Image (tube, rainbow, N blue to C red; front, side, top):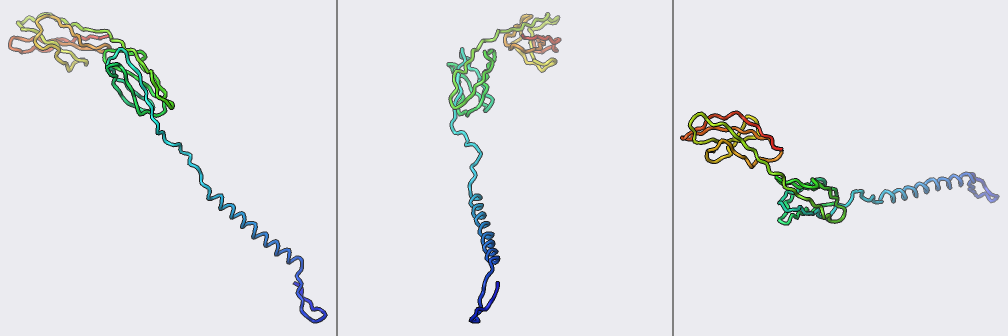
Length: 217
């Protein structure tokens, strides 16, 4: 700032152009950052949408039939697990299922199934027609025979187990008078072990005979 006196002697104040320019620059320096801070605060307040998908609420079913009807047990595995029993018409249904891939497998003692298992993919609709054909297995028997005891006996008992050396379970009720016995309760794919005893008139049993092995195909 420059001070001078006019002709009247009054004090005059004159500002140089440099001072004015500096004041203008300072005004710009403080005003511009204020605008940036205000804008930044607006960005921070924005909400970010959630990336988690909404849970499934609509459920579906998988169904089919097994023919002929056998009362088979049907097992569901994969995206969920469950079991069902086919009704007297051979029909079965799994309910409450969500989208996903499942495997359906039937089973019943004495039967084989074609196909053995099927895949079912639930994708926004019920799945039907997962059908199976049941075929009765071939009936098997095992006949055990033995030589007559040298002692006087009233009959014989026959025992069977699935482990060599026992334990064994008796197959007959009363003593067997003959020297053979046909076991019609054996199952395909199982190995059995048989032993026999001699029974006297008082009901006393001998020790077990040597073990005999039978492999059921």
